[in-house]
Image 1 (cartoon, rainbow, N blue to C red):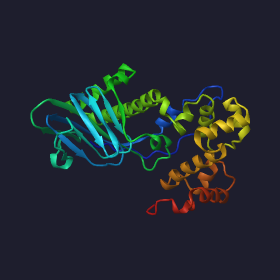
Image 2 (cartoon, one colour):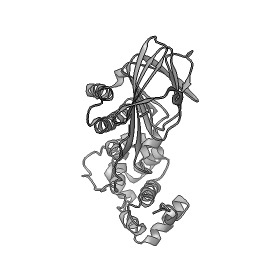
Image 3 (cartoon, rainbow, N blue to C red):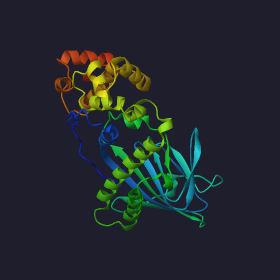
Image 4 (cartoon, rainbow, N blue to C red):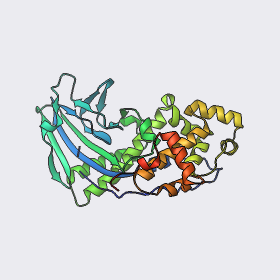
Length: 328
C-alpha cells in the first residue's frame, strides 16, 4: 500500500574486475543493482475481527507486523502465521489475504478506503474493535525492466520471523519506519525510501543465509566458494573474452571439475551462461535507450554490431531493433 517517490533512470554499471584473489560478494553486487524507482507505504491499524483481500500489484511488497498477530493466505500456498516483529516479503507482488484468523470475513482493500495522512503516506483503519494489530506495509518498484537474476529466483512469499533477524539493527530500522509513517515529518518520503531499500536487502540476505538447504540454481551457485568466484567475474566484466581456462583458474579448479560443477548448479555451460547474461543486459540497455546497438555490442565484447545482432537473435529470438521502445 501506499506514498510515492520517483527516481532517476540509471545507466549501466561500470563492470570493473576485482582482484581474482578476493572472494566476490556477488549477492551484495546484485542487490546493489536493484535501483528503487518508486515506493508506497501505509500504516494499517486493525482490530479483530478483520480481513483484507489485497490484489496483485507490480513490484516487491513487504508487511512488518508492529503489534498483534495475523494470518496470510495466497493461492496454492500454505497459510503463514505472523506475530509482532515478523516481516513477510512478497517479491512478485502476489495477491494475498491477511486476517486476524481463518474465520474472519475478507473485504477487498478498495472497499476499506485508505486515507492520505501526509507526504503521500496512507492510513487504513478497519475492524470490529477487538484485539489490535498494527502493520506497516510497503510496495517497491524498480527502474524499468531489470536484468537482475535474483528477483526471478525468489519464492512467492518469504517469511522472516523476529528470531531469524540476526542483526539487531534491522529491528531498529523496522521500528524507525513505523515511527516515520506515524509522525509524518518533513522528509518522511525520502527517509522511508532509504529504509525500504535497507529492509529489502536485509530480508533477502537473511533468507539466503538461513535457507541454504533449499537453495538451488543461481542462488546456490553464488554461495559456492569456487563457482561463485567465476560467476562474479562474469557479472563484473561481461564483455571480457572469457574461456573455460580462465574461469576454471579463477575458481581454482581443473577445467573438467569446473565445467561439471558449473553445469550441476546452473544447468548450463559457462559459455551458454555468459551469452545468456550478456543478452539479458543488452535487452535492458537497448530497451531503455541507455546505449545504441553498436555501443552495446562493444560493451559486451563483440567485434561488430553484426556479430552481436546475430548472437542476440539466436538467443532472444528477435533482432535488437525490435527491443527498443518504439516511442523513443
